[in-house]
Image (cartoon, rainbow, N blue to C red; front, side, top):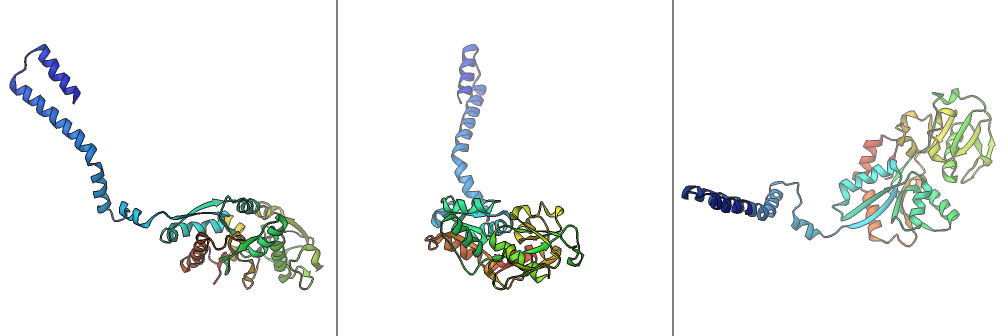
Length: 309
């Protein structure tokens, strides 16, 4: 607007202008000014119009009436727990009034340390025996929700052999180094005829082997190292979460597989003892037990991860 004013003044200072030209300049100036002001003032109206025209947009009124969602921080391992919780976050959490912040850990210790230190409100990656053993060793008590969510079955895998019958004497076999998953892997080896354990040993360890006809050499290693070291060993007992993360199929690639009859090794939601009544954590657990989640697990993992009824 000021620009046109200077044009008019400048024109008057330099030379006379006729009536028609003056009228044109004044009219053009008024039109430009009104355009600027109308653009600034009409923007909210345009937004409201777009919201009404687009059924997928959320009107501001709806945001006000629904109120703020309950926020919860949940620690997971990437696969499958992280993928399952991501499904819940995208498809179920909003309608339930829950805002889930997913924090991913590749290490079991860091996940439980974060829970102990209050960095997260709950985690979803471990089964009850692992939780209990970890709590005793690190002097804090956790609470596990039951029935559990899913089972990552332990399988025996090999890059060298297609059948357990081909495995030679003195074969090198790796199993997880934590007590509960070590027990599970040893039980699969026992059921496969490689070893025999002391009766009622629970959790069983390599020290509980009383028969070893092929004299297999068992080495305990961290679960995360099972897949990277697989080409260098004859057999490996691996939990399903690492198998899925590596892109293998537990039900197709495993030479032997843990039975799903013992749900004590199924994964569930865990929090600190005393926080199990927190409405946010209870809501999280309820969502993970939803029938839509069970169907998602069945469809996506095809038996490599098993939902708990």
